[in-house]
Length: 343
Image (cartoon, rainbow, N blue to C red; front, side, top):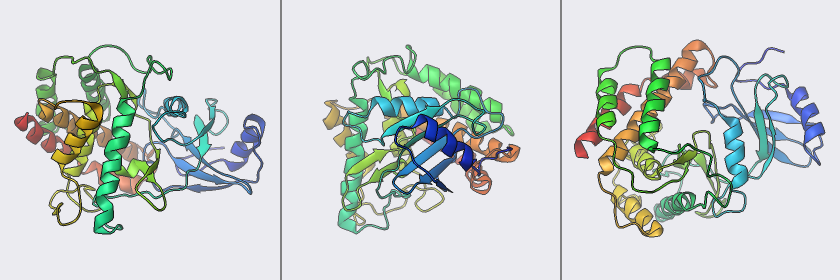
């Protein structure tokens, strides 16, 4: 059966789960989530349970991209830690079942916020959600990677040198035209990689508010989602990624907080978020934060360039939204250059 990124061979999934997931009973009703640009994500509802299935998109993919096997491994390892994740059930690496690898986990009941300005919450309820973001981020970086079996989840060596090299290659593979700002940013990052400081931690790789679920009636985080880009690396990359997102324009397009009156609207400032994060991890402060911020802008530019290329090639989960995202590659490159000048 020919598959695309928006469909799921439900009979094939149901037959496979009956054989490989203890206690599973159909029938299954499947519904695709609008979120999950990179790996198409579906709710699987049965009479007695609700699951979530994450699959690789079909078609020709960039090497190392869409690593659902890594998502499954890291979330399995975090089951008994202070990091909230969904319960993992089963991983299928046989492409013949539905056309690409997939895994199945529990659906977690919770609220998902798309915008960091949290317009759906009362002003007094917004800051506790941001504070919880900081608490969970510190918990991720404090995971004992040896104890949970993740010490080999990422290679040794300078994380930023490795990541700049990787994302430059990914960007080149999906490049659709020359962007001078991106060329300048890549050159600057290569020339300004900080010296190693001994920190080697679990890194989420795409940590932002819309990749989290919060309790239905409070600020507590009940699950961190979308671990595709996770690895072992340097924690400030995650921290800077949060600040990068917040520096984008407020509203559905930028999904940031630039231009918002944070004090009046009950929103935490960048400096306050960084300060409380450092206190939780026992860190005195962060030197040259501009480098980490520039790196975050660069990596996001490379990621959304890949999303744009998949849309143009017909492999995107949501082609219209993917093309819209792709329009912002120059904005992220320019943001990276602004951050570089502040380093």
